[in-house]
Length: 345
Image (tube, rainbow, N blue to C red; front, side):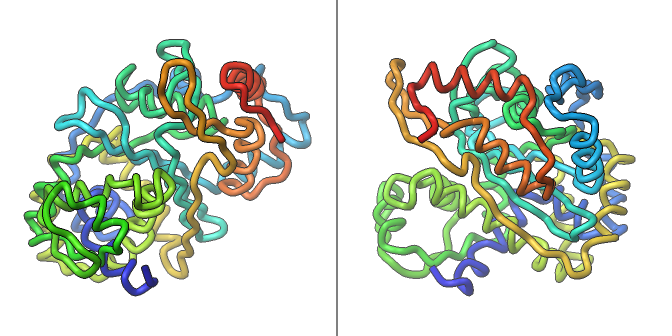
């Protein structure tokens, strides 16, 4: 698929999945009149309950920690979660994307996390697929698990479900795509599809976004998810006031978030300061993994190793070479190796 085709397929569905993100990041004041209608989920604010590394778990010396903390100050991380059931109180997190706003470098970094990543789930004290964390405790548990496994400091999330997305696609008149032959093959359970251009209705659009078997697997699906946001901001900047208001009225009630009105205003201020000349980068975690079927009969993306993958992630997000994995990440990495039999090469 060419860059031009990626743009045409990404912009509308991006509006659907991340409506709140449009309101937050475009930096337009008109969004604020709708923000009091946010469906806000109250969450703890202390580091321990969010899974953020504690002082006694840090492995860096004083000089390393000082450099690392300075790098952290310029980056705000946000978790976007898409759930695979109608509604927000059950199911698994089918989409997990870390949005990192680097104000110093004027970069928005998008890291999609593979849902089948073998990870430690704090709520059940077990090793499972990362997307099972949502069943254990909703978006807070997913955010906590990601913080624990990846040594991150995420404090806020945005959640959507796919029924809401389907309704929104229908609302905007369908989803235009160019479908290659492999994607068309995977889509034939929904009708007669061949390579070419289509305008999908809401139900078909959701199926298209979730296919993977002949369409690049989880990495291919993750890439499509990241592409949606990659082109979202440029499109959102061109939305007219009337279009923004109409779409916001319909879609804002379908999203759940930990953000309050005041915290969104601060995020808007942050984005206003970096939107001119904003660059984007895309990543997929784990960077190095082995696909393994374990004793439970399920397929996992097993990081090779969690420690080395987290090192790479930290370098990408914070542009820091002073980071040293925490005691917790070292323990998780060691346990995953022993549990899976996948070791460093």
